[in-house]
Amino acid sequence: MKILVPVKRVVDYNVKVRVKSDGTGVDIANVKMSMNPFDEIAIEEAVRLKEKGVATEVIAVSCGAPQCQETLRTAMAIGADRAILVETTEELQPLAVAKLLKALVEKEQPQLVILGKQAIDDDCNQTGQMLAALLGWPQATFASKVDVEGGMVKVAREVDGGSETLSLSLPAIVTTDLRLNEPRYVTLPNIMKAKKKQLDNFKPEALGVDVKPHIKTLKVSEPPKRGAGVKVADVAALVDKLKNEAKVI
Amino acid sequence: MTSLVIAEHDNASIRPATLNTVTAAAQCGGEVHLLVAGKGAEAAARAASQIAGVTKVIHIEGDHFAHGLAENMAAQVLALCGNGAGSYSHILFPATASGKNIAPRVAATLDVGQISDITKVDAADTFERPIYAGNAIAIVQSLDAVKVITVRTTGFDPAASTGGAASIEKLDGVADSGKSSFVSSEIAKSDRPELTAAKIIVSGGRALGSSEKFNEFLTPLADKLGAALGASRAAVDAGFAPNDWQVGQTGKIVAPQLYIAVGISGAIQHLAGMKDSKVIVAINKDAEAPIFSVADYGLESDLFTAVPELVAAL
Figure 1 (spheres, helix red, strand yellow):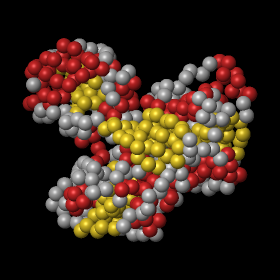
Figure 2 (cartoon, one colour; figure 1 turned 135 degrees about the vertical axis):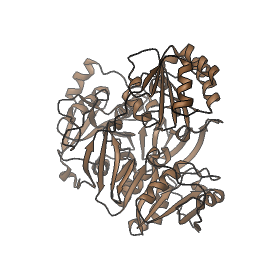
Figure 3 (tube, one colour; figure 1 turned 90 degrees about the horizontal axis):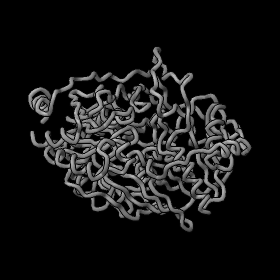
Figure 4 (spheres, each protein chain N blue to C red; figure 1 turned 60 degrees about the vertical axis):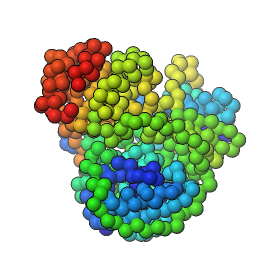
């Protein structure tokens, strides 16, 4: 069984982004870029399924600028067998990415696609579900446990108030939540090995996909600042403030 | 122009997130219809018909709607909007685990972009939404005829749950997709208010040190205040609190009247989940903790002495 894992190159989660003064977006020139943390969990899960003998091949995919190759090399250092870059400098929105992935799924015929539940830049939380819809496949989002048995995948997923378990027929889409696993550290030997692994390159046109945007960003601004309040001396002063000033208790 | 809101419910009653979503739908202009799809959901459909501002409730019954499976729910929504040819200009879901699961399936099938997590309606096609964990706000315009939207509930006041008189139309549902099935659920039973609907939240961080200490110190405070319990990602990762208590970019977004952060340093990703709270209290012994930069009232003190004192003083 092949597993396809899409990964996105995003601003590192430790970077505090700044909004550009002209309001056209956030300034990502010269900031550290990394693999989206949820996608790292997705790669780790796929590699573990391969190590368990469930999967035979793990293919990492990224859509975007040429620098996404670095992200794909990281995915291969974690353990993906090969990688595909769909290269474009156009802005890609989730629907466009889902269409590109659909074209690759039809080419590669994986039984399982594991994606991060959301990217930490646009916070959309859409691509996995959109891909499932375009393929007509079942989905289990926000996964905290994945078991492949026979032609089915059993997934425990995070829902409001607790968790639930679903059973899906394969092929299927799974999106990852934080508790699914803890990604391994990549070691130097594996980084070296990853450099030799196969990385194919496609253009969106070659896949016959129209990546036109459906949503236009008019303006990006700083969120309203919340000013710091006061420090209180002790618990009695705190209770007094909450009762008499804020009147919230 | 008519909006369709997909109600979140437990078959007996309507979940509060639905009410905020109705408000957002009303701001898009035009009538608001509400879809209640479930199993034995008559009571929920009746409750839905009372919501102020809703003109029609569409009630769908079926065993395969009992657990809100995304495949069946999305197919049902698509059937109602004639796969895009129908009369709905806006299709809105609460940005909850359930809404986020279903909405993109609907959008992709309609070949439209989805606008996630809106916090403001500027015009019928223009919306505000946070990006980068709330570190920036984007104003975005949909270029599609049908707008598929998820609504961040803290951005909108709830519609009144009574006072409306919508008609209830019972329709036949779509067939089961047969591709996914519900196996079991492990929902923690609790008398506490739901985190996203609570007026007061007591939230704990890694400084609590263990799950025993987390419960020993925070439960009495939450009990005294009738508060929901929350946690930082660090506390959840350390196993002090269950995952569904997590407040932050990767967890729940909350905006209660009062948020008490106990032993939470205030990482960006946590602040993203709670900085719209009306009043924020921080209890932390580290004077430099970033949480103090957003707190209305900061108490620089050891939580293991301050929290019991606070419980005694309330």
